[in-house]
Image 1 (spheres, rainbow, N blue to C red):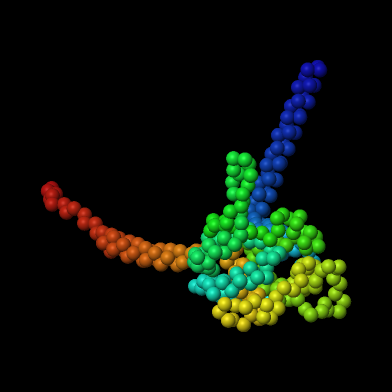
Image 2: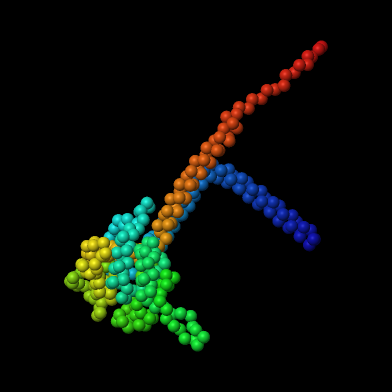
Length: 323
């Protein structure tokens, strides 16, 4: 009896399970038929929602990280310099070599007392700023260390074209001591190392007012300059009208001297600019000619193939059928 009752309960459970499965299948088929009719609308809504979410995410990310990041406030960064039409920045223009010569004279007579050009050798000045004889004479004015001799002593020798322009101080400590704790930066790459480049250097050199404006606070030992970050700079105004006597008798006004020395410092940062522009023009001319020749050769070689007409002539059946 127990076995029969267990068998009956098992059959009832199996039949109930089968009926549930059949009901589920019917419900799924009916729902699938209904969803089939609504699938285009749901897909369009889902695509629109996904697009909106993606666009919103991009906009929010750009809002957080897209704008230019400033490490300081606008007041601490200083006044934004005016953009000037520098001739050497144009594609088909080179450095004004007369301006480079005047700028090097300003550097030697004014800037070299505090700032160095440690990356510029005398040989780089030949043919661009100075002649070979002038560069040699300038190099011999300074003395450089030689290799240690047999006794280990280091002797001094006159400079050569392969030597680099000397620093006004022996080390950084001496430079700080001579400038009230401020370290004058090296000017070899100063144009590339400052935001604004030539515009910033020119504005800085010509931006010293006669007196600080009302409300401006300048620390002890500092000078007010609105273009310098923080507006307090250790370097005082160094360019004054008539400070330098140019060899070509150009009037040595403050803007003229600032413009000349800025062009020279731009050349010092990239002395290969003229050669790079010249080589770029050669490459453009050669590649343009080769491109035109390649087009002509392509059209000449493929003209017969592209203009050829392919006609299919089926073979004629000469056999006659006899009945």
